[in-house]
Image (cartoon, rainbow, N blue to C red):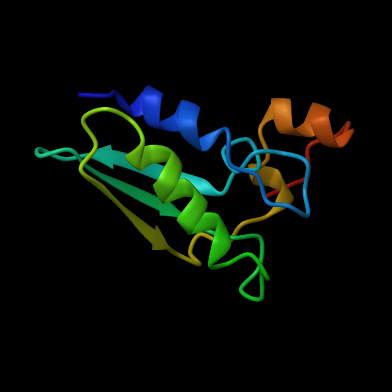
Length: 105
């Protein structure tokens, strides 16, 4: 059975095509849980409710995670609370984007 870190490793290979940072470092993934039977549940958000990639990103996520040995399926829950903001970007994501200061939440 894969670990949660294995799932995050796969999710770090998924990018919003408009932003050169993976969805984990962008701060879009809020939670990952693995259930018995190999089901993976991911709670995430998008940068905006009008994101043009709202259908594509979750499908790419499912393909990546479902490719892990031991995963029988992946459920993606898109939530809007807490709202995403630049303060959610990881230090690695800030470097990739050339952001020096950390915005306030």
